[in-house]
Length: 155
Image (tube, rainbow, N blue to C red; front, side, top):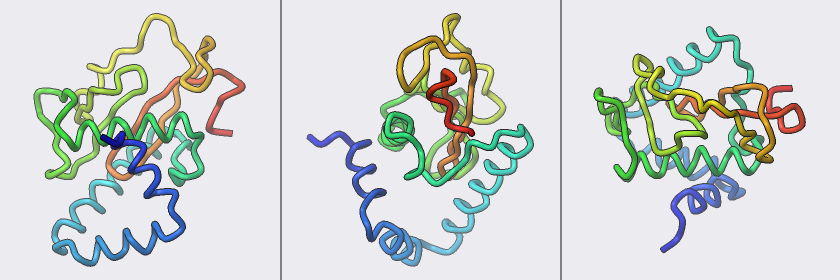
């Protein structure tokens, strides 16, 4: 079986990705497109309010981070991960949060404290000691990750 995160990454990096997304959105009921867009806008506003400027096009992120985000999304969509007690679901678009140090846990915004940081921060990019936490957005997902100065994403 193909790794779902890797399969999604292949699709996102495909030269006709934008066209495919537009076609899928056109086939979706308008109310679902509106809900997904509203939830993604809400997530963007939360990121802006936190003063985090890491949100960029997913293809512009380092491979290690993009893969971690996509693996988390694939697990969540398949129902293979854990959620907070509010049980956020891709079928009910709302901003959600996950972290590289707990990739199988997706929580609603109210339950972010459940994603406690490990006592020792390890850089998601190279494995060295990390000194910062950053956040990237992909649609409704706000994804926290730790970095060292050499692997910093927000520059």
